[in-house]
Amino acid sequence: MGLLQAVALGFVQGATEFLPVSSDGHLALVYRAFGSAPDLTFEVFLHFATLLAMLVYFRSDLMSLLRSLTSAGKGSAERRLALRIAGGTVLTGAVALALEPLVEPMSASGLWLGVWFLTTAALLAVGEFLGPRVPRTDGAQALTWPRTTLVALLQGLAVLPGLSRSGSTIAGGMLAGLRRDEAARFSFLLGIPIITLAAAKDAVGIASGTVALPGAGASAAGFVVAGVTGYLAVWGLLALVKRHSLMVFSVYTAVVGTALLIAYFAA
Image (tube, rainbow, N blue to C red):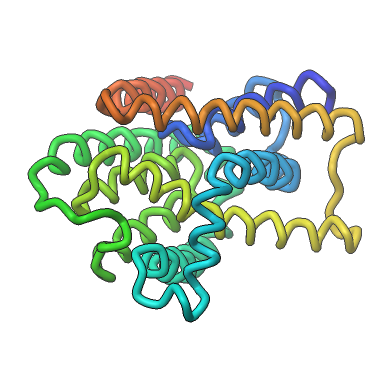
């Protein structure tokens, strides 16, 4: 992998990991543009860069959640939220592991990329249309377990390329009764453990020598670009959802999905 491709992948990963447009789907498009096969090891390496961006951005929230797990925090809103994140992570991990064999072949298929981009568009539209009609929940810490399960299930399904993790979980949170900004923040906090586990799993492979990264220069450049771009994307999205709907992202992913299907059937 050359430096230009690594930087392009890093930028796309950082910009799209947190925007509701599917980072995996866009990474697959970059691979297709460069005429190369997906490098899932490098993708997880880039996920680690965006994970660091999330940890820096949400450092205060994470410290509060960790402190709440002590006996002194029993019954607190932070403790209830931490337990929901933990339970949701278990379900997400189970779904993602079950779907893992499908990820690579779907990443290389214009048909499936188109289908899952359109699914992202539909979820965002449904969330925006039905979310305001759902009785409000008093913050993510007050989500019932069935509603938490809905969001976690959507996060697990988002391992499929073209199906946005942030888009799915934000839409799921809105359908669970959260305001758009609350759903976005819960989406990011819920994503931290599963992204951490994915990065740790691949780190074991790298350390054992069973998988390898591209050259040091290309890897470092992609990592830095992904981290900086990811931090800016988190900040930008949280600012945007306070005042604006997600329909622009629904339209965008619908256009991308439709274009992919047209290209597939026209080939």
